Figure 1 (spheres, rainbow, N blue to C red):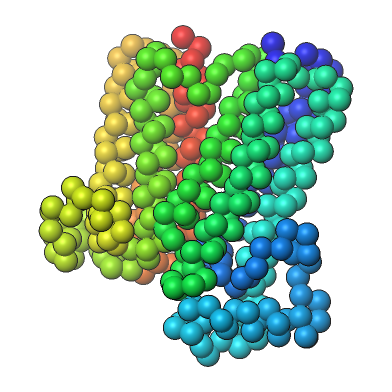
Figure 2: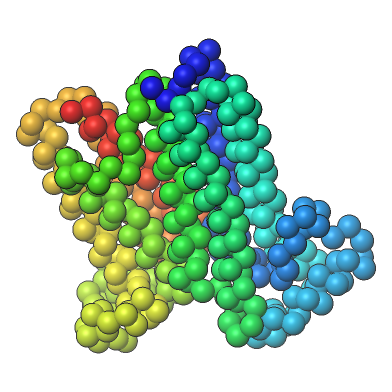
Length: 342
């Protein structure tokens, strides 16, 4: 058992739950930062001094002058005022500040639990790996921002996808550990055995869909075809040929990315129907509740995706579509966890 002192059960549960809530907020703010094109407003990676925003007119003008040096300002936001710049600056600043606070919220309690020998050596190692991943996430965030400071007006969609996926790996891992704490078990999250491989493939599909969602956002691919179920009266987009889907260039072609993102959603929906038949055919009643939660989130996610398109990329629907990804991931992990009872 990884929890060696049960008197700390409540405190460790609250700690992991607070980490999940905080990470949820970070993903929400990160999504809005992307949707408002605010991610390039801070052009320097100042780990210590960046804790505080500009506090004087002089420092605000300096930050604004730095922003004026990048392509996004010259090609898109040339008419932006200092007050408008402050709005996008604060979105990015809030995202970075939340990331710093999350690291402290993870490290200090972990250090306390380590001193008190609350967890086993194995679990301490797992938590240490998570903290290293948190630090790496900060580096990836800056690596992503760098891609939009020289030649591009936005960040690399590949780096954006990596940044998002790392956040959701952290989210899924912490949620899994929380379930272990609450159930006094020690189930392995990254278990590569063939047992229940169908749910592992399903979670892989979810992460793949998240990746294509990040590609869609990073390339602004949703602006091209805003009709459903067809793509401007066609199933296949008319501005590309089918061969492009078989090449690596498809991942950088907005129309192809939107097409793949749509159809992967259909595949996930059909796959979930297959899992439903499996659960009911074998009368696995202990899975009914988690399955209902999962199916509900899949339907909500699909409806939000369609609404985002038909609304002309309304920031409200787009934000809800992005943030519901975390809840869909939780429902998938929860179903997988319950399946491990077999």
